[in-house]
Length: 228
Image (cartoon, rainbow, N blue to C red; front, side):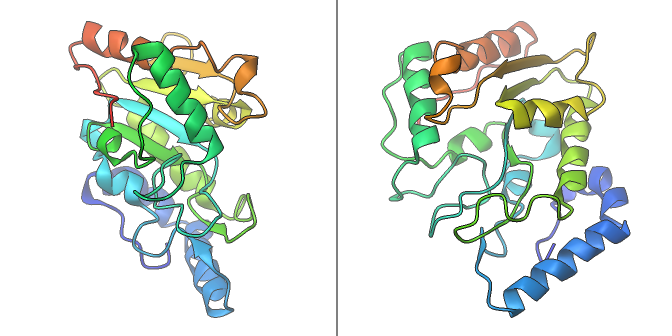
């Protein structure tokens, strides 16, 4: 993936798809884009940050995003997250509003969600790169198979997990993954996307954080500390 290394805990699950011609083509295409002067976010070394920060055996919650932020200094490899000192984007502001309403937690001043990832919240985008200023520009280039395999690996684990799916894109993603259908031992929470265009259509009031914690505690996996 243009020099990003698959973390060890994910290697067995992802190795088969990484050996496909499509995956090799993706790596070559990313290198060619950069050599042509294209600016790609997030930078090399952080494109697999979601997998590196949350080892497969430690995943308790999966939050699926679509693709990285396409503005300067925003994307750092975790879906919906931005680095400290970066202005909180609108969708994340709405996530924080729901967090406050759901759990009574104060809205965080930082948009850096790394503490969630370190507790077992896999913050995974469907597409892991994007060209600067061009949302969705790397969709269909080969990331889907890799991130499908990552989500499937979580679904196939014995430990119950929570899958939080915001928006139609995330729901379609889960629909491709065996193990998330009826009878699965996981909890699947769906709602509209937290973007300003759709948050008032059912995202607000969906209470994903308290529902996730209640499920995890019932199954002996412990609650997530969602405060930042």
